[in-house]
Image (cartoon, rainbow, N blue to C red; front, side):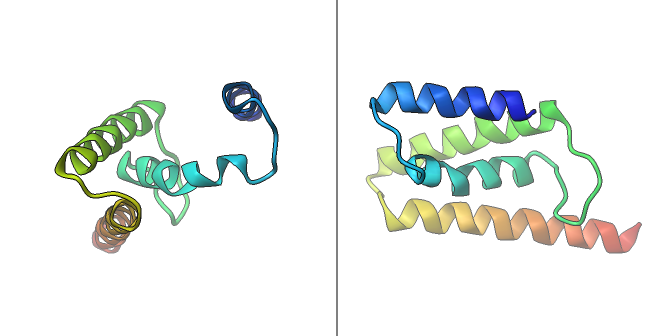
Length: 98
């Protein structure tokens, strides 16, 4: 897994043609939203690659919809945050029931 993270970092550095430690900071919120939406629990346990892939597709579609409506910047971060809060809330409710 660390290999893929390093490889992704190399690809991002090649795309922007420079390296700075905070280069990938803009990807953090949407990545966390994709992972939590894909079914990985904040409380531990295991997630699946397929679930994370589906979460990425949903977040990518959501981002395309946000841009097509004309919302940018703060609103995209707010919507990603809401997705994280809702998915963590659903996971906590399901965890209490089981």
